[in-house]
Image (cartoon, rainbow over all chains, first blue to last red; front, side, top):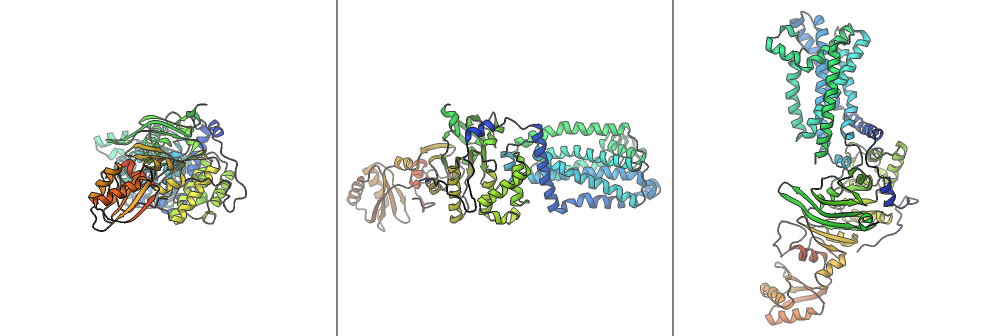
Length: 286
Length: 334
């Protein structure tokens, strides 16, 4: 039997809030989120992602250790064989490593989203009156920090072992910005994979399968002229090659070439396609 | 305003299929403003699925649902502003502290940073979590998580709150606290729709109860109405050791035309009666059949008996519909 306990004030609360009025709530309920609300919600989600990053610093291993290790390893192992000297190899290789690092960083975006979606808090996100894109875009905004670290560290490590970028400060800044933008846009593909995959492990496996050949079958580490015909043809159409070439043009010559334009355009196209796909698939996900 | 506009929830013919399985099979519901509406049913009866549809978390396959007159399928975003949802499993962020969780949910719903912080600390105070405000959720006990989860549903003070098995897994003391909290919410003007598999919870809390089994609503009414639907009172008998239980059952069937609830191991037999004075007829009949009795009492029927009478099985397991014999009642119903 239900007995209504009226005005049983819990300890510590001086006065009750006004009584809830359904009619007022209905009148106040808006049909959809505005653009301003969507942006604010995305930033709240980014705040959450940054908090989590700070509490799990091991998440930064890939964006710190990989640039340092790969830069040193590739330079000293392949430098002599490919370019005759380590010093001569650096202008070719550093932009390649930058591209490779931001692409690997994208992969973890999908894996972490998948892990996150399995947690109870995502049930609450779904029940809240918020833009459906906010839980997906928020972590990606936070990931900008990771791309920045990855790209900057690669250049820093390169310079530490003797790389002198011909593009100067502006060229390198441009290259870093381009890498961040490209990484961020490509990450939407992995976000989409995160929303459709069965588990975080399968996201990881699938992403490796795509990324490993995509980065190595490109001009990231070798001059295209040394490759056999059919492979050279593939490498030339591989989008990663365009990113690498664009990064080289900026970092080594401070030149905004058509490669830069194509890379930006491709990035935009990826966002236009995969952002709506991700939101749609996220909505369907039970 | 019509009835459908003023009702907190008004649903007709709700259906949800999961592949071959029809989890919710044409349920009609009306939850009035300011009441506690209990949805009672065993595990797998379709309670959570129904709640998820009403809360916009699952698409509705067929039928219609309105929340304060707002169509759930057509205007989900508006419905989400009117309801708070607290699920069976705590839906808060394990990596954040209690304050950070509530602050985040407040910010997401349009509160300014300072307001979100003030609301967070008020709710933590109200739910007795102020001491744990700065602790990460991973250090919270089950009861604390549940309270934080409910607090998180109340940030914007929605007029309707869905509670999915709010006390499952809680110890009796914490359970009592949760019941008090729920009653306080109603005193504030909220409407509560809760699911439970505990008969006593529905009995204690709910103004009206819908009994759900295999995705269908099998009964609805106040706790008293449901109890009197299976008879005014129950004759509780303890058969003597070695008594012929089959003969006892047949006798009861012959005298009052109802199936008794018999526990073979203990020899306990409960007989639903339309009126208490039929008890004498049963006792005379048993003596004539030579069935010996060691104790007799007459009591109001419990919700356990109601549930058994309505569904043909007890609340514990929906998969044994033919089981008319039961063990100890799942919970002690008053």
